[in-house]
Length: 113
Image 1 (tube, rainbow, N blue to C red):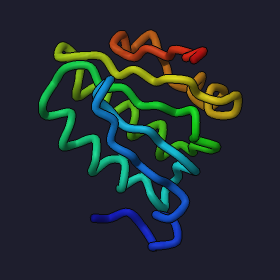
Image 2 (image 1 turned 135 degrees about the vertical axis):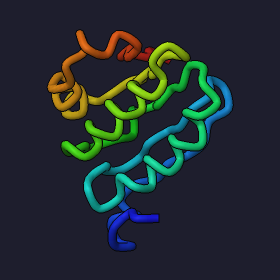
Image 3 (image 1 turned 30 degrees about the vertical axis):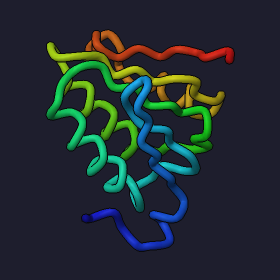
C-alpha cells in the first residue's frame, strides 16, 4: 500500500459504513495518506452502486484527495453515484474546485441529523 509515511496514515481514519454503503472519513486527507482511501475505495467501486463518503469529520483535503474523488466518480459512472455527505466549510470550498458539470454522478448533500 503506497500511503506514504506512517505518520500521514495516522492523520486519516477511513471507517467502513454499511448503511448507506460507504466510508466515514475523519481527520486530514492529503498526499501522505490518500493511498489509504484509494485502497478502500477500489474494493467498493468494483461492486458498482451508490457509494457514500461521510465527510463531516474531515478537517482538510488537498488536491490528491480531490483527484481520488474524481477517479472514484469516473469509475462509478454509469453504475452508481458518489455521494459526499456533510462536508465542513473548508472541505466544501475545496470541493468547489471539482468541475461538477463533468461529474454528473457526484452529489454533495448536507445531513441535518
